[in-house]
Length: 128
Image (tube, rainbow, N blue to C red; front, side, top):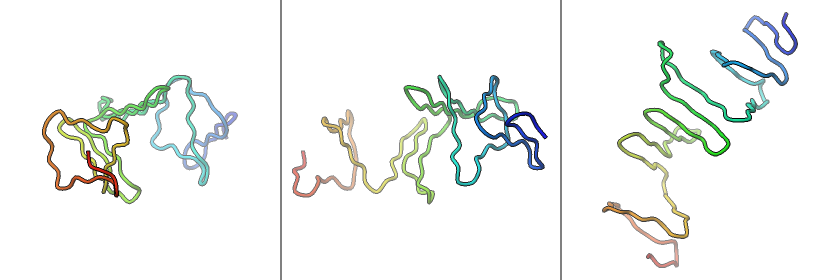
């Protein structure tokens, strides 16, 4: 049936408990048991590559100790209902939220002209 924590089932391989992979892991699908989280632990980073048929990297997500990096033609953040909150590509960055707040003490600086249909301050605060 298997070896240690690894079992062969009708649906594929089932891995239970903690396991260590010394080489890259290739899988069509990886999922946890219903109701349980799926954890990845690494001393350096966790990298997810999306490859084409010629094994060329199309997109890449790297989570490391200092940053989360995404490489690809476009990056999007959406709500659970699918509404676009943020997207970025080589040509533009789009913020799709109903309201954009800049919380930094220095505010924001626009080195070139901007265009907007509405500029306002918080209620009872001056616009500066």
